Image (cartoon, rainbow, N blue to C red):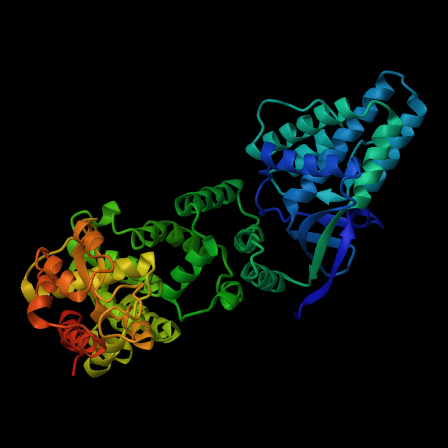
Length: 562
């Protein structure tokens, strides 16, 4: 990949040698590791020390550098901070031996050598440390003035990051002191692990290439914190204006609110959907580049962060039909339930723009329109969703500027009646949990259209009956083996049936099943015996064409249909 200076595997000793310096960008996340992560690392180290394992892989480090001597830690700060604190805990144990006059000269020498090799140089006159690792703005002073100098660690007036670092130091100190009693053992402990712990190091030239690395690795299942990189850029723009501390604190406060609201939602996903609700559509790969070129002033950063905070609630609500926002809006709630069932995400940017700029009636019409389009285009048509995103983005921008939209704005992605009817007439739904719910929804909607009989699709009372059994053999009815495979999952072969009756139906013949269908409360089902005296591939196709004609009328936007 262009912009990557090098990728290599390095031990901790190699990382910290040759005068190299590492800095965590000042606005990167604070130190957050706790007992679970500390213990995981400790158990791995114990396995190394007992020779159960020859080496231990510590994961990826993404570093940004322009001179190959000074590196910004774009990803991996939690691991490097923990390693530094673990070594400082070991130095504290050596210092205890010196204070206890146990081989003081040798142990002082061991302590100094390890300090210089893995922590940094301390000026003997000023006691100012020149460290190999510089932490972020909320952590570095504590690290530099207390941890590195092996002073008593203050318990009061510490922030969350400092509290975690203090607890980490004490946690490792207690275990190392108990495990290793002599200076030789303590020095041997450090000397051993620095050669057996190794990282995959990716060096990049700038933040943009770091972001590309994140997206590439995340796509391969290695989850890195690209949101930290976004945050660092935005906060750095403000920092360059030499802001009052209250401005940075306000940014931190708003950022924390956004992250807190989103919970498990990925921040960068939300950011892309928000950005595409106000600007020309940008893909994941170009998001960071676009924001860097667009957000250049303190005012723009504050505007973006505040808008993100205000819109986060809408973003979450459009994914949750049961959100309080829709309590008195049944039509919107209904459309959002359908889109959730369809697993449609392409509408998020459009809906954020729509909610901000349309009346309640206008937004209701927008959600209903998109539900019908999604049923025709995605669920039945199975068409490429990328084309939808471009249309939805264009409509979002129109709504943003004009506060209105027209049904004709969606003409290019509205599957026309003839195509929809043909697609529906041949559609199959394999037996999955999601498909089961979709088929219940489809049949229930057709039921109310044709018979004005309402079926609760969320109820467990009704299930999906395969008229030709899903596991039928060649002795079932008028079907060959090939006809069974072609027919069993077609919509025409599926119907609504009460759970109890469905269990009775099982593998019975069509004639026997019809006796059960006549007992069903579903008119779509109990009409089958009156319409069909036998059941074969041709009958399934006939019934499916009948259902398709109804579907064309049920899922219809009058202004767009031909």
